Every structure is written in C-alpha cells, then in structure tokens.
Amino acid sequence: MVARPLVETARNTMLFSEIVALALDSFRTSKWRFALTALGMVIGTASLIVVVTIGLTGKQYVMNQIQGIGANLIYAYYEGGSNASVSTSVRDDLTVEDMRAVQQEVPGIQAASPMTEIHDRISVGGGKERDILVLGVSPQYSTVRNLEILAGRFFDEEDAMARAHVAVVTQQWAQRVYQGQSAAVGQNIKINGLPFVVIGTFRERVETFGQSEIAGDTILIPYSVSRYFIGSDAVKQVFFSVSDAGDVPRATEMIQRVLQSRHRPASVYRVENLTQLLQVAASAANALTLMLLGISLLVLLVSGVGIMNIMLANVRTRIREIGIRKAIGATSREIRLQFLTEAILISLAGGIVGTVIGLAIPFSARFLTAFRVPISGLSAIIAIVVAVLVGVIFGTLPAARAAQLDPVEALHYE
Image 1 (spheres, helix red, strand yellow):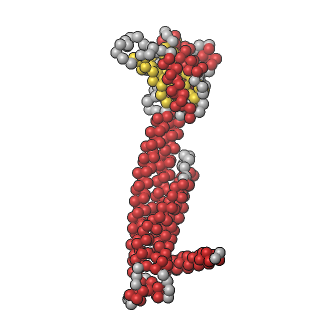
Image 2: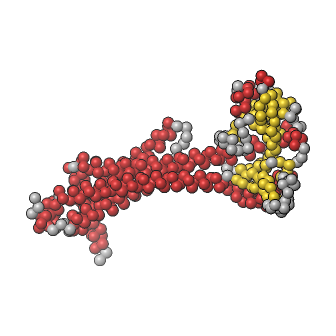
Image 3: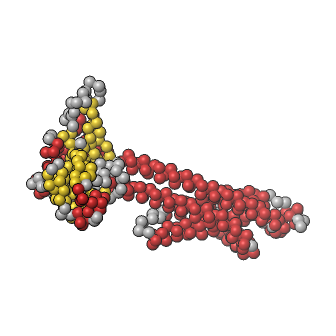
C-alpha cells in the first residue's frame, strides 16, 4: 500500500518529462513560429518591469526633493483671530519664548529657529538700489532648513550672542551682485543704515522657486540683531526640526497644543509639516505606476491572445499526430497536458527573456547617470508569475480542443 503512491509519483514524473521533451521537439521543428509567438511576452514582461522601475524612480526622486527641503521640518505661524470679535489690530504673534517653551515641553526637538522678516532697499555696485528680503534667524536655521553653504560660513552662536553685524546671502544674490560665491565673502552692505559684513553664501538644497520663505534676493542675519529693527519680540514664523521623521505627526500636534495654551483662545496658529506632501507625492507616483502597469498588462493580454491563436493553429496542423498518439494509448488528459505545457513554456520563455531585458535596462542606467535607479526584484517575480498565468489561461482552450478530438476522425484527417 505504501509503494503504490510512489509508483504513481514516478509514473507522473516520467509522463511530465516525456511531455516536456515532446514540447521541445515541437519548438525545434518550428523555431521561427516559437520565437515570434514568444516575442509578445518578451515585450510585455520587459515593459512591466521598466514601468515599475520608472514609477519607483519618479517616486524616489520626488521623495528626495521633498526631503531636501526637510522631511523632519515643522513650522508654525500666527494666522489671526478665529472670529470677527477679535480685532485685526490686536495681534497675538508668536515669540521666541513660545519657541523655547516648545523646546522644553515637546520631546524630540533637535533644532529650532525663529524668523523675522524685513524688507529694505540697499545700494549695490554703481549706485543702483535693489529690493531685498532680510530674514532674522538663529544659527540653527541652517540645520533646520537643510541649507547648503557654498562659500564662507554661516553665523554661529558666538555671533548671535555678540549681536555681530554679519550676513549670509543667497547664491543668486552673490552671482548677480558680486559675480561669484567667493567674491561675495567679505563684502560690506548696509541694512537699515547699519553696516553688515557678508561672511557666507548659501542655497536651498532643493530649488523651491520662491515658494518658501527664501526668495532670490534674500539676506540672512542673526535674529538677535534683527529684533531691534522690528522693535518687538514678535516673530513671523518658528521652525523646528525633530530627530526622527516618524515623530513629525506627533510633534506637530504637541507643538500646536503648547502654542495654543500660551495665547488667547481666539487666536489661530498653524503648525504644519511636509508629511502630507510626502504622502500626496507617494500617492501620485503610485497612481501613475498603476496606470502604466495597466498598459503593460494589456500588452501581456494581447500576447496571450497571440499565443492562443498560434496554439489553435498548431492543433489544426497536428491533428493526425494527436490521432496516432490517442490510438497507441494516450489519454485526453495527457494530450491536454501536452498542449497546455507547450503554451506555458512559450509564455515562460518569453517572460524570462523579457525579465532579463527589463532588469538590464535600469541596471545599465546606473552607469550612465549619477542618480541611483531602483531595481525591483519583486517586479521580476511578478512578471514571471504573470507570464505563467498567461500561458495557463490562453493555453487552456487550444489544449481542450486537442483533447476533445476523436482519434478515428483524426487518423482520417488529411
């Protein structure tokens, strides 16, 4: 009784090996038909992998751009009163004390900076005047906003404590006024009549095209100096950076509560971060990838229809062979399995070649560009599985047609 299942297993193994051998013989006798039939699967599976790679690359690029601004960034600002009873003339602005309270009460705050905003006109070379935006910030602003220092340095805590008249200018300003980054360092400018020395030039790591608080003609000076131009402790915005990006939502809620508790209930404060923007970007990239995947699957379905048509034609040309096989004892199940195996092998062969081509394209792109193109091993597995499924689905009808042939009629077929 124990030996019987082993005999059945051995018989099935031999049967399957014979069927595969017959399928390979059939492919050898009609190489071009086999190659052209598998070509559709090559294109379909290669496009599927390339589409996934394009989607992942686009998603990674957008994420890198947003993270360049500061994935851990949280910023707060005063919006106004929540109802008409609060006069617009009675402001309830944020202050540096609010920032310090947040640093004490909210865990995980890595760096923080207030920001004041001053608009001025200053003289440049040739007696020309230019409108500039002056932001008063703390030394930690460079860390919070992930700025890139191009020449010189950013002002430090010692400069802030000494209320030093030092400034850092944007890359655009240095290039436009001084014709270079290094040439700007050491230059003297006057802001509100006071002389400042340019000690460095900077740029945002990701170009925001003026959509952030930093414009093209922007000069940064220590907050400890800028507050005397304003005449109060009010700040326009407060920036925070947390140590872990996963803590951003929690820290945002806690900052909101701390700020609201320190001001009038009717005052409205916005505390925002880039997490939602990251989620929107990821969703948009995923939606685009799914749309392109749908197109790739359509190509695979067309390839499957091609396999089915070729296999139906193959059945018609091999009717006499099927009759002989049935006459010498082949069952309908064996005939069905033979033609289904041929369809699967055609589809699988095309899928494997397409997968190799699909993976080779992004892999070779790594040597042609500095951007690291992501390669998805999962997409390769999915492509192979889909290729097998296409062979099974579209090979079933031809296999059933072959299995249903009457051996007597098949032997008389010319």
